[in-house]
Amino acid sequence: MPNKHKKVLILGSGAAGLTAAIYSARANLKPILIHGMQPGGQMTITTDVENYPGFPDVIQGPWLMEQMQSQAENVGTKMITDTVVSAKLNVRPFELVCDSGDTYTTDALIISTGAQAKWLGIDSEKKYQGFGVSACATCDGFFYRGKEVAVIGGGNTAVEEALYLTNHAEKVKLIHRRDTLRAEKLLQERLFSHPKIEIIWNTVVDEIMGNTEGPMPEVTGISLKNIKTNEITQHNLQGVFVAIGHTPNTEIFGNQLHKDIEGYIITKPDSTATNIPGVFAAGDVQDNVYRQAITAAGTGCMAALEVEKFIAEQ
Image 1: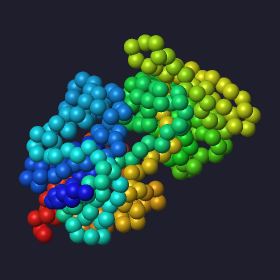
Image 2 (image 1 turned 60 degrees about the vertical axis):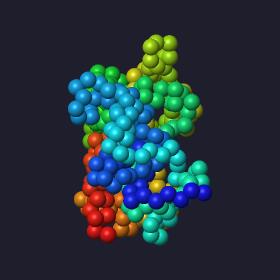
Image 3 (image 1 turned 90 degrees about the vertical axis):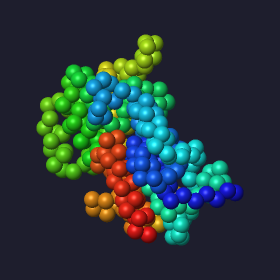
Image 4 (image 1 turned 135 degrees about the vertical axis):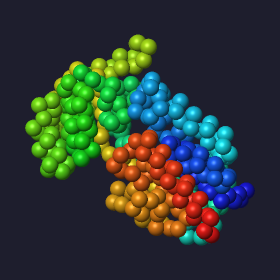
């Protein structure tokens, strides 16, 4: 199978990968970018975007990614539609094998493979993703001003999302399948004392209800099942935020890179450098805190600048 060598190879085509591509191409490093399983990253399942600087009107997530890709291509990035299935980072140059059978070698690697939100896995959830079902309160909470919403989960993320949503929503229901929360005690105290938040214990989502007859689908309520009594209850609300965690896309690297307990790549302080010289990580694959397009783009820029310096010193 063809073996292709490049100075810089970028994995992933979300905000981090595309920004890294723009900067490294402008540095005349002639990068190639391999799209991966989800071209455009998580922004492709985000409909209305109001918090990306430079756009006074609401824009669409997929459109923003298309613009970033066009910009990256215009400055010299070569895009590859393929998925890396294995990576050897203990050899020089680094070696990556794709699903197509193609093999790529590179002097410097930028990993921006992102993280996937964990979903409930019920049919009605998929039907309303981006139209009332979200995995990011910071991204979408603004659209629920004066409305009622539900947050699913019981860890730090769920509690933080519920508290954040009180800035916009009239009422927030936190739905948890156990009778205790896993979140930090300080967060729990803030949650329990907040007048806008109602906690529903020992409960799972049975169905997300909505209307698909209008111009766009919309959530109108949620059906809940008490796991101890099997009682089904229905609640009228307009938004459902799933906060049961994220999974970083780092499986193909095995134990070659230092990762935290959740699988996120550990980078050096104030840097995108990993434990392997020449391998850099940007975006949600190394960020389990902010998870925003703008912060991903920022680390993509950092990675490209660090790659430029790394190659110059070789």
